[in-house]
Image (cartoon, rainbow, N blue to C red; front, side, top):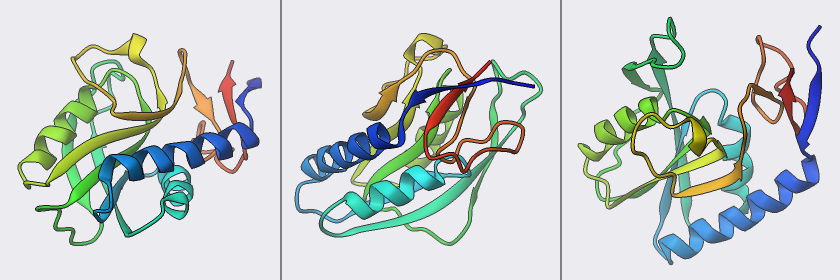
Length: 171
């Protein structure tokens, strides 16, 4: 049986998401913004973030199908839009659960830039800059994290415990 150790409490997450929402609104100014969540781990984070952002904000979700045979170097194979989303001339904030190596995110951001958004920024719930294998900057992050895996607040471990109100490391 795996042991879960609480890393970020529900209260810490709530406070940080509120602060992050204000940072994103400040970055976008009064302009409408669009949160583009990467399923499925970012769903809880995106929902809470969206509700805390004042002003005009929309959202959508995409799924990134990847080859996970080698988790350290997995490359994205396909981006699936769950509904038609036109991001041209929009202020887009890509919302991701955990950014580690940066390989998937670099691929994704490159593909999304081709759709000509006004701005394109990356927002991470958990950022692991020590794990980067590519040059990638996370524009906004809720928390910096050490080596994972993590569970809770939408993050599942072996398909379980995504409903925990806090984030825990798995040992």
